[in-house]
Length: 114
Image (cartoon, rainbow, N blue to C red; front, side, top):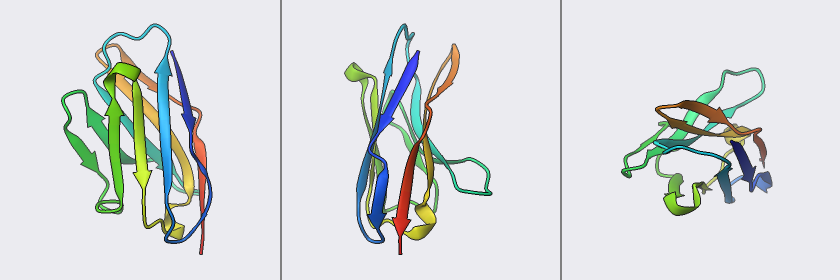
């Protein structure tokens, strides 16, 4: 299983970015797809995740600014990030979970300049 993430980059505060992550390979049924992030010197934290049934959860720090969505047919998850702040600067990791376990993508860097 491979997770290919894209969409990271440098953006000014107040700007927007859209991350996407596609899972490929021999994948049994995926339950949860989501995004985590890790800022320098901090632990990895959940940003948002979405179940196959559509249930979503967000970190309090991104509620109202970030939106997660997924295309089950394409095994792809998206993260629309609006009103970005400098504290959103981090490496963002895609994650997929199922009854078979969990896979992580390599991460994509998001840098928000103030």
